[in-house]
Length: 480
Ligand SMILES: Cc1ncc(COP(=O)(O)O)c(C=O)c1O
Image 1 (cartoon, helix red, strand yellow):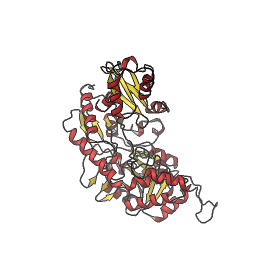
Image 2: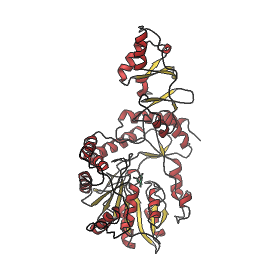
Image 3: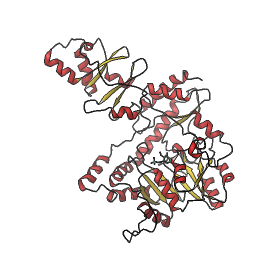
């Protein structure tokens, strides 16, 4: 466990040696172990108190360590761990079934290698402070405008409207395109449920389409069979950063006079034939949730090609109020605005857009090369001509004979957070009643065997090597 080494002291060591460990890690704490078993912990406060009474640097650390302390099993939910931090508890040891110390949670990281965490190392803090200092904390303010402007510039000057999250971005795009009661929208069967929920909330019915077995995005050759007189739109999701078969799907949309909506929540920075995702559809949506490539905590964006749709969407975003006559409502609308503070974070993130996306792609190359000799993987993200895959979340499909849940649980014991692929939408209770493709075997297979590996922009090659090393170890013991 390379990176917790700096926090560990063997129980037989002296106070002097413990001081040296604490001094090196700079965190004011270390954990006392016998082999790997956790016996206690020592803080610099404990040592201070000891020296006020005694003065023996050679005393064995196990004689003075704290034996009562907060700890959790490594598989404890992140939310429970997070709620246990206090002013005086900034580090919590995580143990396995044998009480071995396997990881250390801190206020900023509940597990050592989280699936996805944002990098807020640019102007985020400066801009937030600026909002607070100037009192511009609501959705009125310069940062919202600047964020939207820069977003448009990165997307061929399409009309950008920032919103509260990616789900209301989807909802708003459907409403702006006048999609509602009695309409059908074709949605891929493997995606986050927000896609189906937004369609249902707009009053329309989702129709679930099988996915392509290589890209895991909507299967373009299947779409036409699902089109009826009620179909109004095709919602394409660029899953995990992969670009869906956008050219063929656009042709189908044109042939049948359907709207094309691109859900780019997971694919900001992906490119097809030199153009960024989001510029191919009539509308496109983005999410800036905390785990997304560009994050504002919560947040989203809607992108339109057509100015009229954008203008309508802007009104709907602001309660449906007429922009020229205050408190006169032309539509029954929503409050889906992003705050100036969120936009301030977004702007700071977009300033580093290029380097963030490049780093994400670099991570995919590291995985690709380190996994080349890893047995047990049936698929890795597929490389397709003309597509730049932005690698939001590096995902692999295990071979059939591996127990995916066991792999996830075992990796957690090494402090590595991973994630299953979404469940097929058609199989879940709220969506069972809607129409779907006859053959959904790809959805089933990919969902059953897929896992996503940590892909935070902050990860270094050493971290990826560690993850792959652990994955290889875990796979050996995870045969069904
Ligand atoms: C494909 C997809 N669509 C939509 C959303 C919804 O975005 P948000 O969480 O910002 O509402 C997500 C987010 O997680 C997503 O992955």
